[in-house]
Amino acid sequence: MEEKMYADRIFYPILKLFSNLKVLLQAIWKTKKGKFLF
Image (cartoon, rainbow, N blue to C red; front, side, top):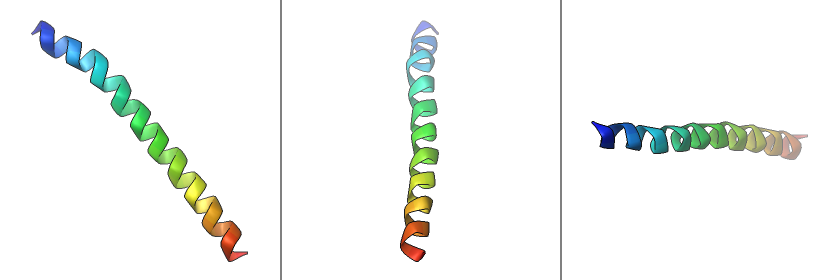
């Protein structure tokens, strides 16, 4: 049980960070596509 709590403590912030980076990259990609289109 302690191992699971330890894993959640480490992996949850990492997953949160990756999801934030994915959103950021998608926003950058969309703006770049927009710049190429216009």
